[in-house]
Image 1 (cartoon, one colour):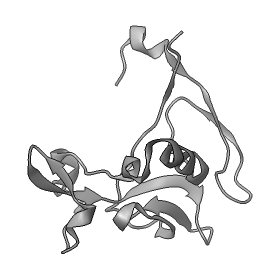
Image 2 (spheres, rainbow, N blue to C red):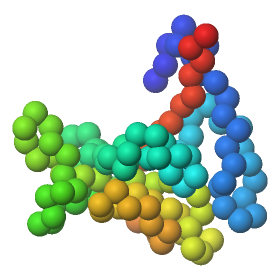
Image 3 (spheres, rainbow, N blue to C red):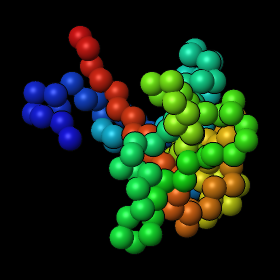
Length: 134
């Protein structure tokens, strides 16, 4: 996904807040934790949590998986793309949820939820990286 010249700018992140009993990790590409997302939301507002998947992610795959796109009547959750309603997609965070088999996710209304079942295939991922600009 990154060329050699680009890779040199990607920093290793020390990932904590993975959940009770879960070890810290060192990663180049990672999912945000609840604490990291709340911090970003405090700086940039809750809209930073809004997301909609790519057309590829929304397409049904041979195994039946596709990204769930929220398309109910609450239009406040929608992202507009070129003036069109693109919907909104739920996405995983790395923090363990309210049970060991669960994880936090971002759902409707930009809410952070703790009960995402890890067997659900319709949630998206928003990979994060830290870059060195100096």
